[in-house]
Length: 178
Image (cartoon, rainbow, N blue to C red; front, side, top):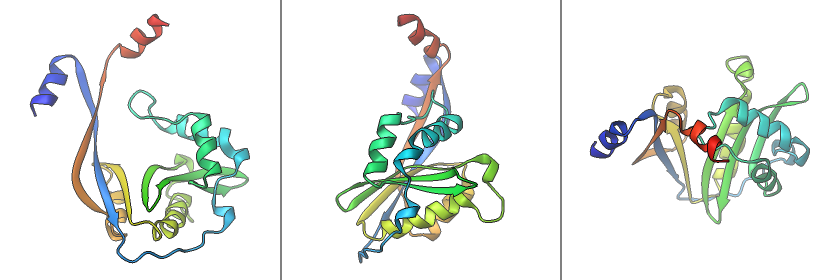
């Protein structure tokens, strides 16, 4: 807690706490994922806007269009579409037999309705995860429904936590330096 006290003493405010979860797969299975489940290069800008609209650029590392384009080429981003639009994404970065879930997002307008596109991309990513030895992800500690879903699919808390802080005026200071 001394570190937290030091940050708050210097004017930082804790925004949220992330907890890391890990899934260890003992028996690997290579399950095919249909090509239409992956994001398409033509959807790069749309996915970028979806992430930028729904993540706080001051507290979360929102990827650039170039990063998203490269991940799409590596077939790391799953996409759910409705009415010709991308409404949910799951980004599973792969490093050999290890994976890292970077982003999982459903457009708020499509949450809690009928077919749940956010859940659909999660199941698609899970198929690919079965071929990975270890997969890690971070989840906000207050997101109980998602934590429950991850626990039901073999993820366990591994003890690592990350606290996100911001300091009022930092963005304005950065802009003045430019």
